[in-house]
Length: 568
Ligand code: FEO
Ligand code: CA
Ligand code: CA
Ligand code: CA
Image (cartoon, rainbow, N blue to C red; front, side):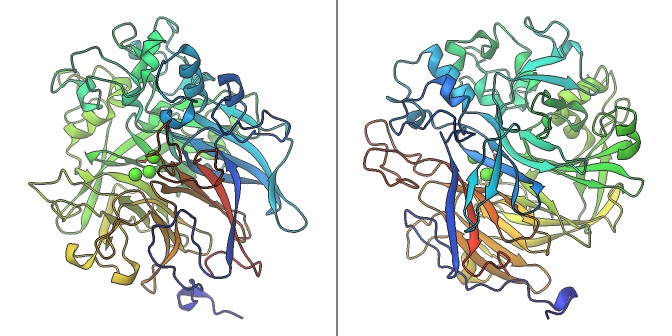
């Protein structure tokens, strides 16, 4: 029997080489199955996928969306069947429609909106171990048209009101659903990330120093939705964009329930949301804001989870939002973003707590947070409670470093570690750089044969393996660019091994496992998105390899030929 504790060896596979193949490459003894590609019906009886992208918007609303990202497996029958919630972050419009973006129509807007959001599907393992979708009363799509509720301190605020919603409590849809997190009460958090690019401000970009500029509203929208739907035209609906950029709670076990936008968790380019229980039983949520020089946050609930729920209150609607400051000496502080505090008074331009939350970034600027190199996913280490988070890269850091972001022109990124000494509600912490990614020339602290760049997805599995998924520049091999990858790390032994290499143009993102650890779900996002309507297979033809098809984002499920624990 294996020894317990830190001496047990966590990684039992032979690492794979970096690569450029149009395939998902795994270690010997592993196999994968494409479970849920873009366009796949959410129940077997649903509308079939047309490989020429000819499905209608109505079909798309009953099929897998595009750009699969964060996800989570909620057991129904343990490790044999469960509900899988899958985010659909964005779309590749060139490949989403037959003929691409040319001759844009309201139907194309509707299809693109239906390809965003979340899928809830029921998955089950057959007798021979194969995973498949089931007909299910839980199966549903949440799209950019699904009625959602605004809850918490900003609900009903003047900034949340629009022509269609004069009360500021109800919004259609959720947008740019990046990564995710499960709650202890078995719901799913889906995080709205780069929502700015869907809203058109008019030909003039918002002025420098304006809240719109701070939230990345430019002078154009790469999504032509505004050309057919006024709610995306900021001249007609100046507040609609403020109703996006939140953490949204979806109850997969209640298909009739409306998604809830939890405004107490702040508005930013949310990456993921990791919920743990504090010492008083309250919800503590860790969150990154993925932009250059943006911040790392946590929310601490006001009351124990059980008490809130017993009184019909959400554990995520009342509490304190904090932003992280990293000091030179390896200590750190969580700065509360509370109206009336330093820099957050009416005289500073914040009328009330709702404004502090709607303009979280401005509040965090005023509080003195530490500008980071694009904080993406975070995860909490089993047993120690240490919080790890990725800083994916930041090539715009050309002038000043700080101790938590030590490299100029940080093209390969790094991974941070925060230690709150087993008190998730603590207002102080200690921190360390866990690793610097990249190649030897960039000063990486990773063995050269396991080099990687742009860490993004990050997840500790139940055994304590740290899974690292990449999105962006990888160290070259013999002068050639390499595909994105996924690695596993044994943080106690300092062992790190490349587990997976994806097809061209894709990022690897989204990860969840069955409770027994023997089936691992991973998302391959936007393979071959350099393809065009004329040549859709120019970048990749994964996963169908059809001579008349196109590449598709997909959820894959990885198993071991001997049925063992993945990574072990
Ligand atoms: Fe959706 Fe920052 O990745
Ligand atoms: Ca993405
Ligand atoms: Ca990401
Ligand atoms: Ca990324």
